[in-house]
Length: 257
Length: 265
Image 1 (tube, rainbow over the protein chains, first blue to last red):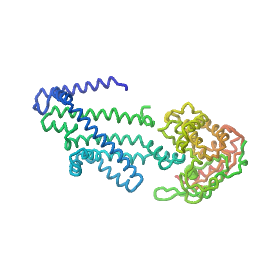
Image 2 (cartoon, chains in turn green, red):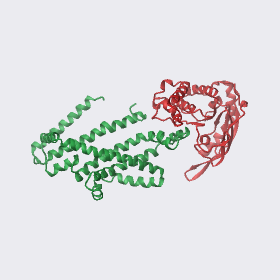
Image 3 (cartoon, rainbow over the protein chains, first blue to last red):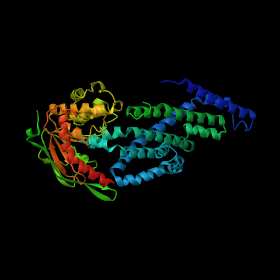
Image 4 (cartoon, rainbow over the protein chains, first blue to last red):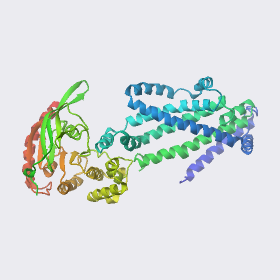
């Protein structure tokens, strides 16, 4: 991977200024120390949760739940999306419903999930799945429908039908736009899991955040927020964005060629 | 040397093909009973004014489109679906961008379950014929339009179809590339003995390639005239002796184009 020195310099400068302003506001004493700790105090909280393994356990549990929930989302979402194509009436209705549910706030699933399933992992998974599955159904539905008819004609003409048409044409032809839906779904799932964990969990990153609030430990709250931000950024930039770029260039869609 | 008169067996026959287009609220009759016999090994070029339904006719022959009346008889049996026996080469090539050039050529063979080694052998033979060996592992977006079209032809030939259906395959090419391909196409036809139906709007192209040129009338289309091109091969576009055939075709085509443009305005 090529690292642009300019980019690094810009990022370093940005964070230096950001921490500088933070320190300045802290020194001015506009807020009491409990409400706004110094950058140093936050670093201390960070060190503490790292040293007593709370943070890594939390990250592990949260990501574990997220991956399981998201994989279920992808599997179910794809099946529903394909059913929407197969059954046109269902597809029309379901695409409106999906559009509505796509903008439905993930946190609003929490009470429903608690009453239906309970304060447990399954309940959290339910929130994650409901928050991300509609990105997947909509993107499956539209990616497959937007495959240029001429590709389908050419493949059919060469003898592809049924399963072979699906495997050798539909899936690869839809992949570049499917990955966009997956990326979006992942970000919804990420929103959902933190929200659900704050309200429903006794472990995980979201839980650490809510512990910080209960004990009025702003250092812990900010440290968790930084962790959440960093993981979100890393997964998107290093994994999903890279994957999307790779697919796009392999499909001849990238702009910089 | 092959001449139109040498062909005896009817490979394909279109009987009274009728087709409507749906245009917003009303139906437009595009094909008004096309009758056409194509003998085995013949190279038939179809010309006609734009919008006359010649591409649609080709799709019907391929089985990708259906007809409202009439039928296409292929090897004695009516066509009701697509078949690798009749491969359509699209104007846009319709190559798959996620596959390499050789995987594109092997697509139909893979679907048919041909083993990998055999597929490679077939694709390299046709890529060699199309002078694309160097590009076997390239992706299609890395190729020029002319190269893409040669890949599309290689892909069609790799299926070893009885009939090759070509829908303005050279329309998007520059003049030099087209001239080259016009010669190559004649060599391929002589070498493979395929029956070819070739739709074009370019009269010179039709006369160079065809054993006969079929002129479609303006919409609703019928076959207005079949003109046999009895002339030695390989033919070159600039050959002055072809001018007479071109004039024969133009004489039939011009009034149809005029009528067509009047309809559209």
